[in-house]
Amino acid sequence: MDYKKIAETVVKKALKLGADEAEAYLENNREFEVNVRNGKVETVKQSMTKGMGLTVFKDKKLGFSYTSDFSEKALEDFVEKTVQLSQIATPKPWNGLPDLKKGKPRDLDLYDPSISKVENNKKIKVATKVEKIALAYDKRIKNSEGGWFGDAESEVFLVSSKGISRRTKSSAVTFGTGVIAGEGDNMQSGYYGSSKAHFKDLEDIEYVAREAGKRALEKLGARPVKTQKVPVVFSRWAAPSFWSGVLSALDGDSVFKKATFMTDYLNKPIASEQITLIDDPTIPRHIASTTFDGEGKLARKNTLIDKGVLKMFIYDTITARKAGVKVNTIAQRYVYKGTPSGSLLNVIVNKGNVKEENIIKGIDQGFYVKGLRGSGTDVPTGNFSVGASGFWISKGELAFPVDGVTLGGNTLELMKNIELVADNLEIRGGLNSPSFKVSELIVGGK
Image 1: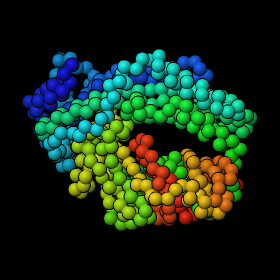
Image 2: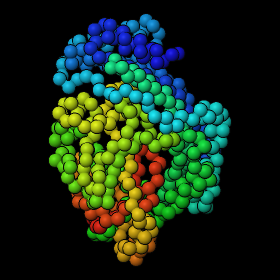
Image 3: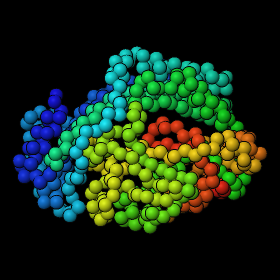
């Protein structure tokens, strides 16, 4: 099928039926997933889907619907019904398509054609092998949570009556495993995986397997510690969970409704001067990069926090208009069945210049956080409370594993008390952070 032509035809039809503005967002996707447990295939899923969402505006009234039927008659009915929806909706002054700059999206090398040529048997072998190696890593590893392999290809077309016609094609591939170590009441699980846009960029199977085994073993014998206020190091594995809570508080709609503790902090310090946080979806061959966002805006780098100062909130076009602000919008559209909403694409906390081991060496007694059970930040109040696990630091060394503790405090105070940022940033997914040290935080235990 000529999907670009289909999208263009739908937009023209909507305008002919009386729409003031129209936008078609079309997806063509393929996905594969296999799960293996104890050497046996448990599930294999494969799907090919296509669909299109149509947004129309008539007299500032919004109509939206979606379809997966691309036959000529079905599309005619689809467009007609969507335009009818716009005629009965309530008009709102901020409604309308975004004003987009024309231009060609950058080639970020996000699509790997070799992925579709990998035979399913090979994919199953990868999932089986990574689990097998992890299970054999140490005799204390007793069971498996399974091995997995998945890949996907996605082609997206966005056509707007404002003269915009964009296309992007991307791929993703992932594999990993989880294992269980210990016996009786002393059992711990460990997971590790690798996800990339290109098949050849995946991490080594043996490395992934060893990391999963290591993560299970290192937690054996974990115990809580007494409640105390000590320096806390958030590892690069735990830090993204923390920052996800901060980012939730930067949502433009929440700011407009005054439903976030960040409402009055634009252009004010909210963190240590060592913290700069950007959204950069323009990194070539990165799994979280994109050539244009959910509204069709060409991908660009945006700075959210600059040396501790909050520089922008996160808006989509309609939310920004409603709030009466002129800003760089950033939007995601997760599936063709929905409209775009303000959301970041690929968040990076800039790295510092200190080795993580040197940060730890400088702490007499403290807590090294390896995992968080949530983000911890309460968006309306800014209170911070979250379950955590990791290692106790004693005399500059990781002394023993810790679990069953809670970190408590205030998110703004925590960010302002960041003393050191490590140089160990690794860009793996859509939210990336180096390790960082907070001068002190309440660690609640027994």
